[in-house]
Length: 175
Image (cartoon, rainbow, N blue to C red; front, side, top):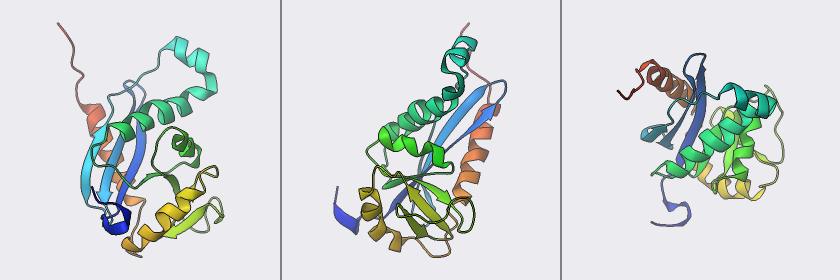
């Protein structure tokens, strides 16, 4: 594997969908800098039981999204992304568990304003975990490979659609 900025920039898009009956399923789509798919991984539906809901309380959803779904998918994927993009800044905690930079996406003028731990890319703004300031310097030179017209929110729609299809599939039951 070559090093430095000579590798084509690979972006990971991580999200999850929830179904009341089947639970939560997460997906990680790794694309090249033009948004073309290189690899897709998804989890099986996860449905916490009543005891887990009680014991974890309000920490259950972040725990499942970050430590179970996010961490598993990033570790499992064969085509490693240079950065994992998420929609919700609360999931920046994933960075504590993986060796790859994690950044939340926002549209300029919406949600949080640009910050020292952020970078503009395409039509959006990337915000990195404040405890990993080195991620900004690591990713900044690679962003020149992403077209200025890139809509980095669009791949999340593709993932949600694929995950919704996954949830429609019948579960395998043993006889």
